[in-house]
Amino acid sequence: MFSTSRPSRRHLLVGGAVGALALAATAVMPTTDAMAATGCAVTYTTNSWQGGFTANVTVKNLGDPVSNWTLGFSFPDGGQRVVQGWSATWQQSGAAVTARSLDYNGALGTGASTTVGFNGSWTGSNPNPTAFTLNGTVCTGGTSTPPPTTPPPTTPPPTTPPPPTGTTPVAINGQLRVCGVNLCNQYGRPIQLRGMSTHGLQWFANCYTDTSLNALADDWQADLLRIAMYVQEQGYETNPAAFTNQVNTLVDKAEARGMYALIDFHTLTPGDPTYNLDRAKTFFATVSARNAAKKNVIYEITNEPNGVSWSTIRNYAEQVIPVIRANDPDAVIIVGTRGWSSLGVSDGGNSDEIVNNPVRAENIMYTFHFYAASHKDNYRNEVQRAAARLPLFVTEFGTVTYTGDGAVDTASSNAWLDLLDRLKISYANWTFSDAPEGSAALRPGTCAAGNFTGTSVLTESGAYLRNRIRTPDNFPTS
Ligand code: IDC
Image 1 (tube, rainbow, N blue to C red):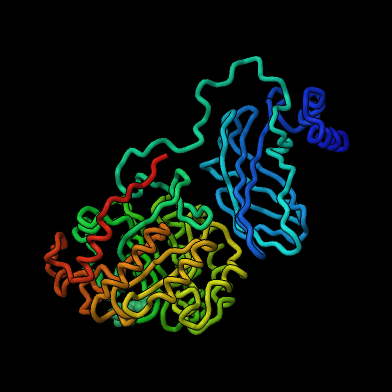
Image 2 (image 1 turned 90 degrees about the vertical axis):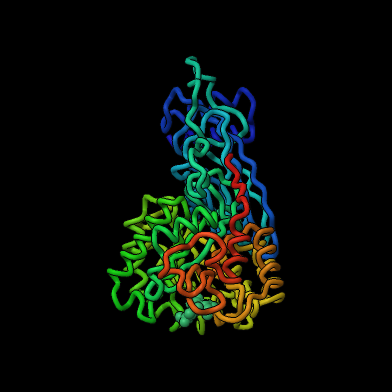
């Protein structure tokens, strides 16, 4: 069968027109429903720079509806590689590339399109592939069997999710995924999440109650709660079961209020994430299994690596990510960067080391942290430069110095948040707590007193952040 089908398909590709259609029909019959019309059109666009490129591939189904699909093509140049793909499961073997649909975009009605993409690397030259297949049918822009005699279904399977029924951030945006350098919602549109980080759960548990989280969701209109679970400093390592439970409880409380929950494995000292590798595997295996069905969970696998190379961090990430993926294949995962998650800048480096040697996993982002009174234009310039090439998430920042204390630097904080807004980079502020330090949003004593609403309980930093966070999100809904 294959020896006869291959020449036929090749003939179809170059020949087109009516004569080729009959040949194609016999070619696909052994592997597809004999009555099914198949056909497809592909648009492949790239944005290329020295050594790297981003490709977007729009696939249009011209045949009968399908419930899942595999796109295939081959790179013309031996030096081209898929590095990080999105909106599909990508595989490369030699020059041959396949992209398999995910749950949310598998259904493609007649005439429906979907767009997938990837970041790639190249050496030599970087020509675009010219031949594509969809479920084995060569995409010529036409159909390969006559239209069916029975009319097509009047309501083909939906290719995008229905409009949201609620108004919370999670109700509107649903399961998030990384697309290109952006964080995208269930409609594949870039969004920015704005929210707050807890302080260390081991010290400030009384700041994270139903009442305080109501204030964060309703009064602050926050999209995101970062759950900072320290590993050392009397944290997780002292009682894994209790801290895991505490994290899970906060994931549920965030979910109940329609907020995203960022699970932060808060490593800090020692700075080598490998020191906590076994703990990380155990912790993430447990929380990813328990929370796999939820749409509001994002995983941050190491807070601030320091004193280690990017390759050490990357190696850690490539061991922890598969543990999460085994349970929760579609969640976004965020990887810390060199120099206290400064993209390497605090160690005299920059983001090139990540661009040139990215983590080999899909649907991931990279961490950037700043403290506005300490980190200024040279850090902002690097974030702006990196944001064109890497998906970034500011999982922690302060309005004060890197010590977590001192005065609010309003000018630098404005410059930072204006930049993040413009680039649609999500952020969480350190901290939603009443710690006696300038970075805390709540005045000392607030958590014990138990009222969290309004501005009278806020510090200068808290009032500033509440104003920034509670402006309308205008999340796209189609
Ligand atoms: C700080 C807290 C402080 C605590 C200290 C040590 O604000 O109360 O005593 O940690 O655990 C980070 C870290 C974050 C730091 C914060 C401020 O991620 O844990 O919190 N910071 O120093 N990176 C840069 C600054």
